[in-house]
Amino acid sequence: MIKRVRIQYLEDAAKKSLVKHLTLKELELLVEFMSRPEGKSGMEKMKYYIANLMPLIQQEVGRAMQEMQSDNQK
Image (cartoon, rainbow, N blue to C red):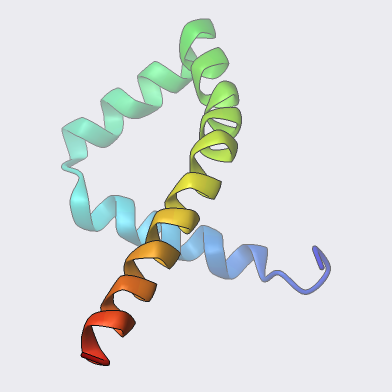
């Protein structure tokens, strides 16, 4: 699976999104934060946060879609 994921495509999309939504000052402060030990540690832990949250998001989206389909059949 990982061989099929286009890492460069995702990195490019992430960079474009950051530039679109953050100011230069915000980006500079983000880089500063991530260069600190606490920032590095916090960002490293984000993968666990996302891993915990993503199944719940997927479950809730699935539930909402089923509810919408049920409403459309009425």
